[in-house]
Image 1: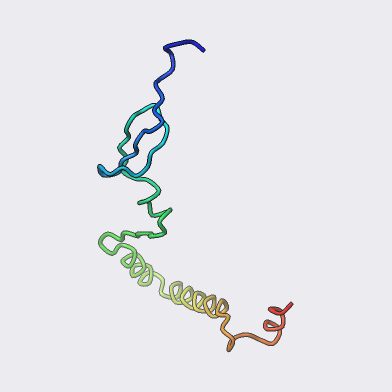
Image 2 (image 1 turned 90 degrees about the vertical axis):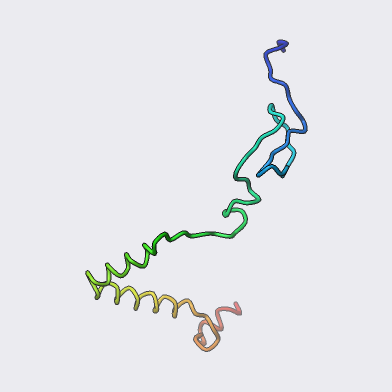
Length: 103
């Protein structure tokens, strides 16, 4: 290998978030400051945050309902039917469904 062409390797490079060291890795940089990492990202933590600024989603649905009330009503009925179909409580199961569980 040629000497002097490769960067210096640090085995104990520190990854910092908000000034706090969160992990130590190998890198060509001694210290890295990051804003997002797996410990605070919603995808990895499972804490999804949906931001609805100025209630825009509900405003859209209100406009849609004014423009085409039958469309919204039909979709509400479909959603209710789908929910009922997915409801597998013992009271809603048929004999065929119960027997299928035992196979």
